[in-house]
Length: 158
Image (tube, rainbow, N blue to C red; front, side):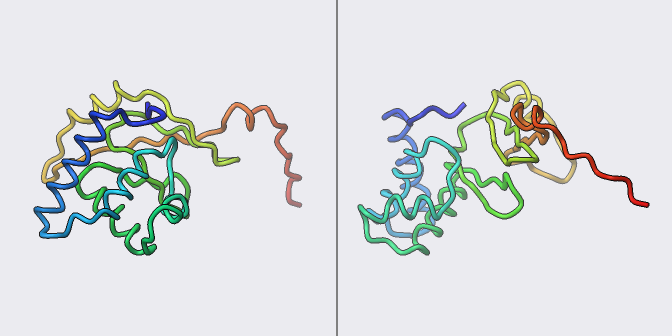
């Protein structure tokens, strides 16, 4: 499960990973890119790019496209993962976590649960002609609050 913060040693490791990746792409290691990485690591839940942009805007003058491009770089170098937990918007989280997403079909709530056993099983699967980079598991249903709500009964069509 995602902790409320990333400890200092992991933060330093991820900064080094990002610096190495940027260098390998012959890109500049700008303070803005690392500020975006730091802000992403501070997020406690799944976040979208607009939320991150608003969060960083007061501290750094960065364009929205810089934030988008940097987040994509962070996904490419396996620091962040992009998920579509609903039909319309991508959200991001730290790639290190091994958990499942329980998604309520009625209210859209997302709950994370330990998925170590499932992750280990999936990582052992081999597919002919395909190299797996990572896997993501979403389980859809009704949260406890929505399952307690009385369902509207539909009148039969005549």
